[in-house]
Amino acid sequence: MDISKLIQVAASTAHKVNLLYSESHGEGRESWQNLTQEARNSVCLGVIELLKDPHQPESSLHDSWCVHKREQGWKFGVKVDIDKKEHPCLVEYSELSAIDRRRDELFKVVVLSIVNPGQVYGHILTLLEHYSHPSL
Image (tube, rainbow, N blue to C red; front, side, top):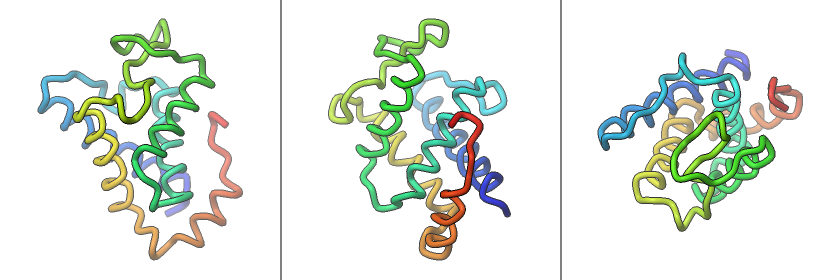
């Protein structure tokens, strides 16, 4: 499987798990198919960041996500508003709710379950150096 496909599979699967987790807590989320391309790219970039350093804590992944969102013009808001580019998770990791921190944990576990970095780590790093994501 090429790196682009692997990233897509890991991203869409992690998103699906987080969707089910969110629904189990009474929160609505968009399915992968209904996400904007910008949102899909954001999830894919999370996969790429994790693959660069599979041992990084969830807080580092969250920090990277926040940087990316802010670079795209997003800011903090009490609820997700795509038109206003507002998101309630644009805060320090320590300020996230337990549910949001668990979503980050689930993301990491799912991605690393799909992509075993121990087997492909060096190969993934080499491929990532040459991978050009549409949003980059």
